[in-house]
Amino acid sequence: MAKAFDQLRHDLLFVTPYERGLLARAGVQPRPSWRGGEKLEQHILGENGAKIGVLLLPPLPKGARNVPENLIHQVENAVHRLRGTVKLVVAMSPWGYAPEQELLKAAGPHPDILLGSGPGIGLVGTIAAGGKTAWVRSFAQGKSVLRLEVLAWPEENSTFKWTEEKNIRMTLFGLTDQYQESPQLLTLMQHMGTD
Image 1 (cartoon, rainbow, N blue to C red):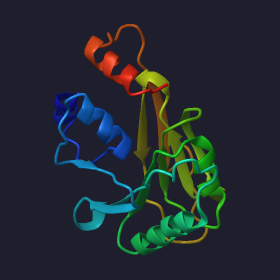
Image 2 (image 1 turned 60 degrees about the horizontal axis):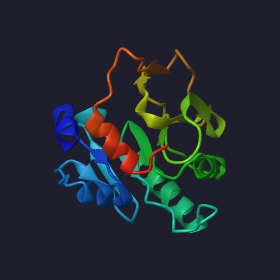
Image 3 (image 1 turned 30 degrees about the vertical axis):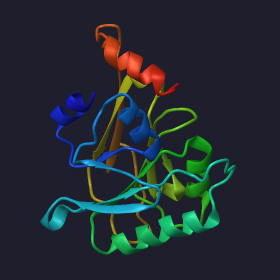
Image 4 (image 1 turned 90 degrees about the vertical axis):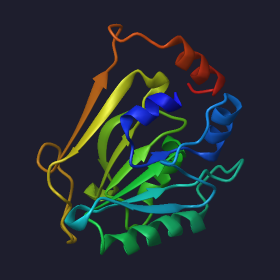
């Protein structure tokens, strides 16, 4: 699996502490592009005028039913700080559907894009937070690939909103039976407890 990820040549790959532990037990060593920890992380990708700010949301505290208010404020403050220096703010979340929804209902500012994962339904793409956030969520069992295309950079004004096919496009590609599962990856994923 690590070799497959290496061939994708990620600039950054979000691996939660839980996933890192499972991968280590399976004998997979961390790679230099792997990021993610117990605290909110902030990274800037790209060069010159095309910089993208990436926020890696930490796991929620064990047993938490809601997102702690101080964590929502940390995310909002990080989005605010990044806004003046990057073209796009992307947050990556392992929280699950309901906690991500909680973040998007908070006062904001919100990330331009929220890439969600964890418990709950998958989303091809929805516009949330009053039009300010494009939210996509991975689907169970890795049976699809989501492609998100930013057709125009978000504008730095209060009237900006994402509009499908105007400034953003969100597409789902189903991996049908023509794509064969790797028995080794399937076994690893089953041991990781993914749905």
